[in-house]
Amino acid sequence: MSWQALRHRVLLPLAGVLIVLAAWQATLLAYDLPVVVLPPPWLVAVTLVKLLGTAAFWRDVAVSVYEFAVGYVLGGVLGVAIGMLIGEWRGFRLAATPVVESLRFVVPFAWIPLTILWFGTSFTGKVVLVAYAVFFVMVVSTSRAIATVDPTLSRVGVALGMNRWRLAWAVHLRAAAPTLASAARAAAAIGWIAVVAAEYIGASAGLGLMITNAASSLATAVVIAGMVVIGLVGAGVSALIGWLARARLDYR
Amino acid sequence: MRALGSLHARLAPRAHAWILGCAGVAIGLAVWTLMAHVLATGGGVINRLPTPARVLAELTRYASGDLWRDLLFSLRVFALGWAIGAASATIVGLVLGRVRWLGSVFIPIVEAIRPVSSIAWVPLSIVWFGFGLGGKVFLVALAVFLVVIVYAIDGSRRVSPALERTATMLGMNGWQRFRSLVLPGTLTEVLIGSRVALMAGWGTVIVAELVAADSGLGAHLISVEQSYDVPAVMAAMACFGITGFLMNALFVRVERRIMPWRHDSNEAGS
Image: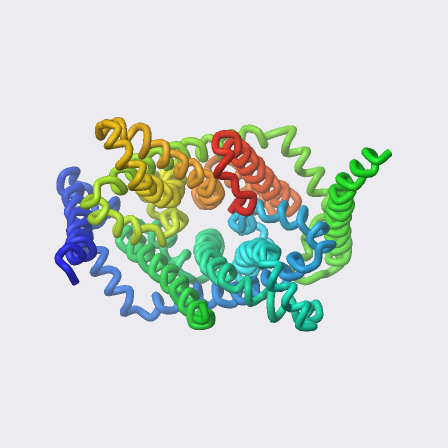
């Protein structure tokens, strides 16, 4: 690595981290803030390490990730299926567009109270919520991707004697795959945060519940450590989906 | 006669779309009504599904009462947070984008914070700011900042080198180049980013008001939820949806007016 690259990729970012940590610590000292308001960075690190050693923490992570995964798969499959129908079948598109467009603006978070009324604080409620969030991202992007497939590809398919189903499955879906891959990552980010938000308001376990409980007992270090974990899991899920997509689409 | 024919040909697809669209909505409402009647007689978990008519009645009742007060409060939180977030993201983005070493120092930190959605900050903001206006504005500003900063950095760097060289050759000094090349480019990107951030910001308002429920639409939603009033819950959800839709439509229109060349009909909302 050249000196220039080393400086800009490693040394300066490292300096940035140090500056932020120093500013954090300096704020504490300058204003003499109590730990409840802002714990020092080392305390957050220690708390995080301690958390990693407890079984309850891992149970919370597992509950949240499980709720997310089931909802994600459900919403993703349904979303791509309905999105393909909308993209392939003009009549269905015209009929479904007003319904989809009007529901799309009712963001998933607004559904949280209703899912609690219907499903309680159970697993089902979170799954429904995540599925709803993921569904709309996938429907919108799938239908657009299918509608904008290069018409030449469709003509080649027709010339090769493909019927409508075969064309949709073997040509359109493949051509739309790169767009779907990036939509799948965006959907994962939204779905993950929907789980966390749902757990703030009604849950019996999970990371969102963990940090709201910590906040109400003023364990601020635990709150910040929990936020770090939420960010890491979110980034991890997104990276995993990106990696899966790349592995499947390496013909590009 | 021919003119009439071509008019008909132009109108026909539109009419077709309208008829099918209305049919879709009608089918949706019919299925909903049917489900409400079926589920009312012991449908397991979802036994409290009201008919669309009852939700509409509830909505008009709410609209003739407290809706405007709640909506005004939510919109104030949103507008304050959105303005603060977009303005600070523009300034920070310009500095980080144009000053290379500062960019190398701080952009990785911005990138590290970005995956932690503003929603994850809700409990911390309650510890810091309590249940009032300040904490909610902070959360919305953060949500908008995290989206717009990317557009601002990108926009500030997008000036083509050829243009910059030409400007130098024409004798423009650093400040003039900044004012007439960098700033307009950045502001166009910021405007696009601000629209993209619209839904992120509005979603954050909802979660913040649901958790720190003291006033606003979200607080109303939580209070009717706690009294098991499903029609009112759905009416409040509709208010959130309609407001989000109107804000997005307004922004798309403004964007089209200001920057007709950047209009892309394929990107909207969320």
